Image (cartoon, rainbow, N blue to C red; front, side):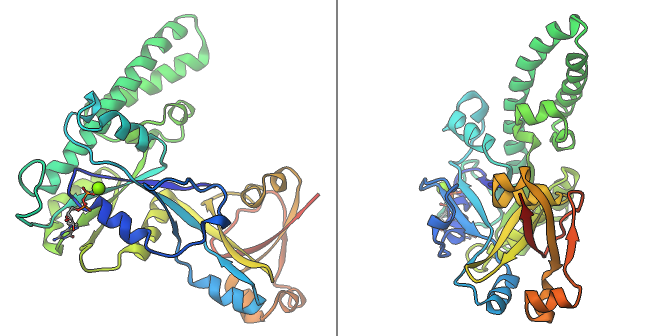
Length: 331
Ligand SMILES: Nc1nc2c(ncn2[C@@H]2O[C@H](COP(=O)(O)OP(=O)(O)O)[C@@H](O)[C@H]2O)c(=O)[nH]1
Ligand SMILES: [Mg+2]
């Protein structure tokens, strides 16, 4: 699964600074053939302390962490939905990502101008979300027009979609996000900007993260991190948070060739997980041998773990757990 996260915010809030910190880590991109090659896209390894331990046990030649692609998206300004600034390109770029990190500036510095002339993260948050909502309203309205015609013919699916989109429009008009509709088929198709999970990065000193601001973020269903990009190493926490916000977990594979982490949606079953390793594995899935990484380490080797009965044979209904070490049996 390719996981991509867009970095979003007004100009001069620290987006590129964050991007540079994230992409400073060394990673051999050749190991990730799906990765996008673009200077504004950074492939960032997911920190995982389990990998080195398993690699030592297996005498692996290499370690391949799971990766997340971060997009450094050009600054959004008021009016982006009408094409202001790099408006249209901006909005097209976020559409392709699965989640967004919203960078809000809380640091003061008279030498670094703020497009709105003052530091006010609450106002900035409102600008960003209203630009996203306005663009989405356009998308939703276009679709509603079509659906109204289809629903008049009595088409059941159209009737249901019409109902959903009317509810979505109501939320947008209230200035709310539309994340709660994420499971609806029509939403997957429309890929609304307000339907993406949000992680807020409050960039600046801790005092900038006021209770009012944090309450607002929580009310939107977002998560947040307060961090001074000038001072702290924000990467591990940011990626872990992003994982959590997106409902992702990793499972592991280990052997002499490599020890590797793979990303799946929490709740994914064994065949889906197998499909992340190789698409054919999902179709031809027979069963999976599974053991928790810590139990495997304690046993000292796969063979020992097997002798101790720690390795379970799981079928197609098994829900993969974070930290499972997996061997897929396929036809
Ligand atoms: N004091 C301070 N300056 C920062 C911080 N983060 C970024 N900057 C500076 O703010 C300016 C704009 O940052 P940049 O990352 O290019 O902003 P972008 O337009 O959002 O990509 C640069 O001069 C950064 O060095 C921070 O946390 N504190
Ligand atoms: Mg920038």
